[in-house]
Image (cartoon, rainbow, N blue to C red; front, side):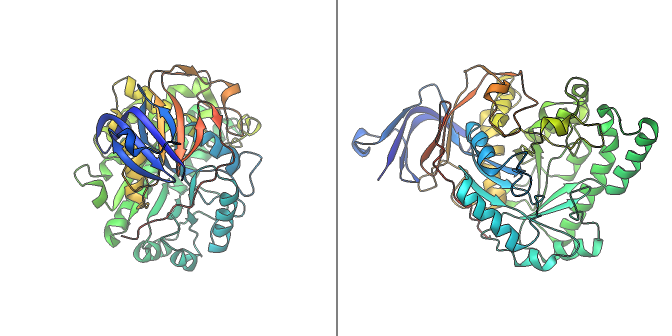
Amino acid sequence: MSSIIIRNGVIINEGSSSTGDILIREDRIAAIGIIDDSLIPGDAKLIEAKGLYIIPGIIDDQVHFREPGLTHKADIFSETRAAAAGGVTSFMDMPNTIPQAVTNEILEEKYRIAQEKSLINYSFYIGGTNTNLSELLSADPQQVCGIKLFLGSSTGNMLVNDEKVLREIFSRSSMLIACHCEDEPTVKRNSEIYREKYGEDVPVKFHPLIRSREACFITSSFAVKLAKEYNTRIHILHLSTADEMKLFSPDIPVHEKRITGEVCIHHLWFEESDYERLGNYIKWNPAIKTKYDRDALLNGVKNNLIDIIATDHAPHTLEEKSATYFKAPSGGPLIQHSLSAMMELFHKKIFTMEMIVDKMCHNPAIIYRIRERGFIREGFKADICIVDPNNKWKVTRQNILCKCGWSPFEGEEFSSRVKYTIANGNVIYNNGVLNENSRGERLLFHTK
């Protein structure tokens, strides 16, 4: 039986921090606290964590790892290497691959690929369309993280804009429904206004006016209305506006919420003045908007209006990102740097570490009902991140691990750095060295 003893670290878990040890046996957490030497196997691997923070492994509920069909941008192996370097031990991947994961057969093929290639734990959404209700309803809620609905511009036929179909999905689904909310007619109308003025080469600074706050609120408020009508579990992804904060309640404990929200790293970090410096590198959908919106989102996290912090990690090649406005795809790579970026906000006293752990580790496990992960608890799977809060480093082209090879954080100096990432009791990242032979597990879910 393989064992690991983590000594003298600051354990940040379930709203409190304390100095102690963690004993791991095989793939489970065996003991937490001040652990007597007599309880530790003689062959246990020692990790000395004095001065380091020990947190549960990060669970990222929104990534695009591009496999199958788009592997020139990224693949499951390459992106889980980057994820492990960032302290992420579990991910949930979106269905807009090629082919689109809109049937259970295609979905299971993605799980097969992940079983072969993923260094960390995994799940995949099944994507909704206007015509695949039977596939959505037959997906196993113990094996699949949720249904993804694009209630706005999307890839191929994944725009779900038939209200009758939406009502069927909302009224009959037992699984969580994760929603991308941007009103398609509003985006199209705004696009034509700017295309008439600038042609194809629209300055990217107008992106938040094309994919406007109105477009976001029209659809997110409609999704919330349907969820309340049918008592559906919905999760609004990548919130980007101050207006949307009024849709959520801070007074309901997260385990009782039926309507939850997520914000992504880029919407907490960047604001519209950054388009001049970074251009298409920070072109995301929904768009990064004003400083006022960013501040409202930061406050939304602090006030528990927003429940989860994720990445929407969505790599594209540098060549693709260098195209003109309408041709340059939206999205970018973030997963390697998400924890370091959030810890900068900790150092600036915007967030506490306990809050970061709630939003990046605990709440994803609670909202998605993930079995035995997301917490440092005896008997739970040993998914752990150990981070040095005072270890400055700079993001450079040379230390970026995602396949696309660039980051909007390039040149940024972070104050904190991940030292170890442990998934299922295996050390998969150790001070810059990856264990590429380790493989993650399929996430499993409670139905209640």
